[in-house]
Length: 237
Image 1 (cartoon, rainbow, N blue to C red):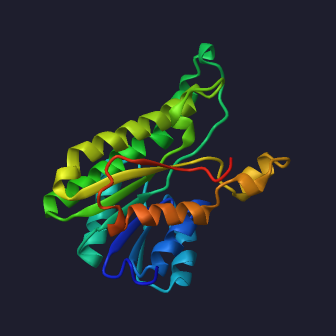
Image 2: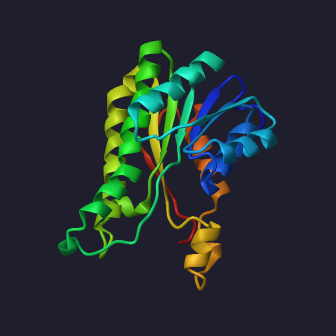
């Protein structure tokens, strides 16, 4: 909806990813000023030029608290506020059985899927609380968080951990005017997923635009009564 985020500042992590780009475009269409956060600033710079709204591009390792705090400081220096955080960072790695005791895989999955949620969402929530500002935090989770599966223990556990972090943070800040919620996609229709599963029925998958709309809803005033929700966005998959 045009103008629904006028006057708001939205921080989008993973801004150069397939989902991140769709989320940036969705919030730009709503009139938000945007902070595009990515490990590298090069790709978000090109995206920023297309969006038609005021943007700030920041490069940061979201597993590093000091780096995240620097992004928050730069955002506040530029825009004076943070109203929305849409955290889209995460990833998948095909696993091995638990009995293989692959500690490297375990560390990679938790460092990619859980640690950035704990640090980024926690630091932004702290800023919102300290500044006395209401806000919205939306975390991209995964349906895989709901149940373990063979050879995916590290991945599913890391996604479950991210979901528990989101729910815990919601319980901690809901009385401070801050809504913390998540979206649970099924398979997202992206070029890499199509390449890895060429025989799948892509029409059943959820598109980045579908997810961006769900994230925008949770970041809107229409979702003011929702706290700690994991919104299932599965399409027909």
